[in-house]
Length: 241
Image (cartoon, rainbow, N blue to C red):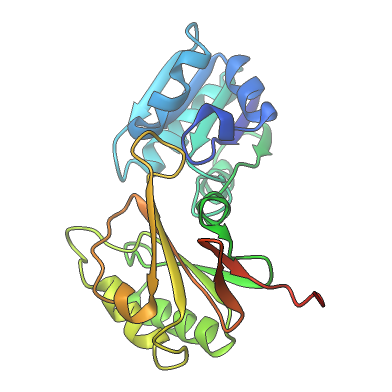
């Protein structure tokens, strides 16, 4: 009995790894958030499909574990990489309540990497990822992490920058970062990476502060070495040119 935790990348078939596709195609049961199942259900038309809505993470993880314990070959899909704000840690946490079974984690292309490729080469050196969602992390801790990344002049990739219930989180984050980074720091935003509705643009950190975003957007904030080269956002590694 086995459970494979599959990172399916940003949403397009081409951005999935070969291992991810194989795992889904050979599963007897495929479990996932409704919004992600739509990207993989055509890969396996004979599997049992179990899907739950937003915030149904514990429910679908338990359902996946139960099917695996029953002896089924199960895949649970997670957007991007399952270990980066994904399902992998929750599966391991919940698995202690069940008989031992094999857990396999298949990595996927996380938003930071997908968006960086669209924008150019902005994370060629050290970078930090920070989710601006305070559903699972207190805002005070998010502020502390943002401040630390800004003090260290990391390139910063922000996940979950805004929603209807926290429309001001990006502005609050920018206010903190502006204490340590110049207002003209180059930033890039990507919405719906690798999907039909994909769009991206570049702006300064000061402009980003008043930019409207949503949960389908990821943002990369540059560092002192970030510049625009031929219309693309690039952070130099430091090679002598």
